[in-house]
Image 1 (cartoon, rainbow, N blue to C red):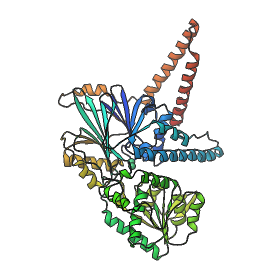
Image 2: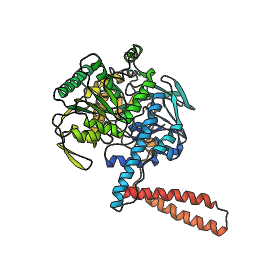
Image 3: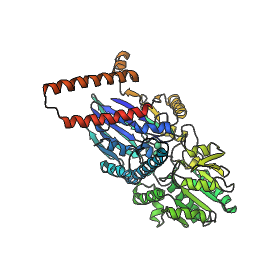
Image 4: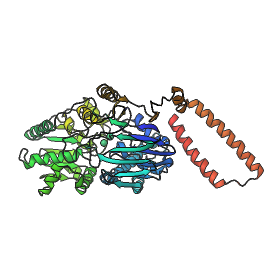
Length: 538
Ligand SMILES: [Zn+2]
Ligand SMILES: [Zn+2]
């Protein structure tokens, strides 16, 4: 088998891994890169995915950094199945279309700006319509069910405890006379969080992809974190101020609602307005309610007691822009929860513009803030930030509460890994900033003596080259030659072009019946690709 690391390596976003077994090719995750222009350029370099050749995509969960390029892949000719849990499919339905909208809006904005600068037309990565079309390729599977994917390849989705529908994926492949098992941790959640079930324990496996988002961090306990949040809210109430919480529309928002609900119901917090100002979060909350079979026992118990943990006294879900604007006219102390979670887009930006400069306001960061995002700049202590072309002073109190994270911390990750028994397990550490992945890789290697590494973007590697068979190094090297320099590839392209012209001339002379229509179309496609190449070289 062979593997190519297409994303989510030495960075947190863009998760995607290409697996090849003979002529069978498939992806695990197909995520979008987010956080800065340089990184996001990779979203356009989709050719290495070879969409038409892929038989299926196994999707760990609905977050855009795992699912966000699926519509683009479908646009590029992907015809296979996207296999995921039912809740993931439900969430993708709203999240991918939302992502398509954002892409369209960004292209529109670029074009308005670009026209004035005399630049060419920007096109969206994909549209909401493309996203909708891509949904028909999705095929839901149940947790725990073993699915036969192809001759000699089967998979099983297990609880990852990260967001609704999230999964650890186990893949079994027939290798020679035996069977090998690959595990993708996906994004791993914490053990004691509300709503979703805890991550499943996995004991057997030969190769593991291990996420490392918080591989260097220790979260405070949930109880401590909740107390901290309640203290902030109480302080805001006493100063008649607002608490602004940027939150990912899925899971973090519902988690906060759940937590505030318990505090308000028990009387720890007085009845105050809680605004959930994110259409995506509202749709996601509806999907949560529809998929209550994914809830943990504690949440199930609340439900069967006749209460809805996602409906709390004083909560207002605001869908329209008018409703959203009206929030700023409410002078009472209260809480505003809005997306996007990393503050890079969406309504949260309006609330930040309204509150960052006010000393009495509180901004509570509860989720991961990737490098290059506005949220990260705020956490890192920026004194001013730019919003809608305006410099805004950061005077509000900024709080970071790690305990609400949807990702396990170092202790949680190591604890989960500790259950794996195969002493010859190979571990690829991914989904983390470079330094953090490298650190966790060393730690796992030192503690469990597994063979660990942190792959590079676009790196290709063989899998299951049996050490016992002692395949000579030379042979491995020959099978996986290093990539040729760009100049060599371009020269080859130039030679191919000349050969094509000669051949075309010869065929025309011979009066052979060439399929002009097809040639025309094919040349058109190549032309487009060359233009993209040109843009990239610029
Ligand atoms: Zn995630
Ligand atoms: Zn992720």
